[in-house]
Amino acid sequence: MRYRALGRTGLVVSEVGFGAWGIGGRTADLTSYGDTDDRTSLAALTRAFDRGITFIDTSAAYGDGHSEELIGQAARGRRESLVIATKAGYDSWQRPPDFSPAAIIASAERSLRRLGSDYIDLLQLHNPPLECLADEAAGGALKRLLDEGKIRSWGVSCKGPDQALAAIQHHAPPVVQANFNMMDLRALDSGLLDETARTSTGFIARTPLCFGFLSGRVGRDTRFPPGDHRSRWPRAQVDNWIDGAADLLAAVGATPGPAAVQAAIRFCLSFPAVSSTIPGILKPHEADEDSAASDLGPLSTGVLAAVQAINRSRQFFVSPAPAA
Image (cartoon, rainbow, N blue to C red; front, side):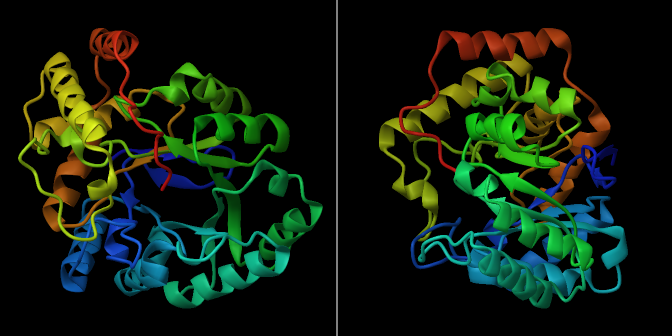
């Protein structure tokens, strides 16, 4: 596993992280990948740590806090070797967000208890409106948490790359998070990656596998399990991603399965502005596949150019891009 600086925060993270949305399990509004087994989730976390994955990204909203609880269990005895990022603003997808100073502090306190830790390495505001970042009171809440040692740094997990770019340009957060993968080049095309490099802002690239489609394992005969958010996507969007993934994987010379997974992750890591990319990991073998991408190094310039050419020749979004 290779490691990178998380912007100007002073934190160093594994370049392949652990996206912990899925292990939160099924919630009432289908915002996950269906039912999970806690023993399998804990085994996946442990395997990831053993493979050198030190960066974990979660949220108070993932499984209504259950993702954080599992991370807290798995982190016992090795907390100091990990960089744990969580989010405030949403405590549940079933309730409206709250970015008031009191809510930010209360959310962080609850996250600390669930994680079984006395500090959070990175607290991200979760899909906040940009005006929230201009609120001196919200900034004061984050400063209080920093001064008390309850968080080590802060950032913004944005709905999309355009919001991340605006956040950097107007509010200078130390870290931003947004979507970036071979079927979603908005972070590249918008200038976000250039801006994060220019300002030494950490960039967390989420959805590197485009919700599993870039693994090549999703086909037209795939039936998503109950509770899987992908079951809500229009059929036209699902088919477009299936076809697009096939074209892109052919361009990078990867067959469906581990080779495809690793090529998709390597694509993200081919850009130095990416601090870490966070594939969703549900099972131990996924931790093995994902972590192995780090040692394979970046894709060639020719392959990167081929991916960008395919993106110029077709539209991958039938529906608006989702935000996790």
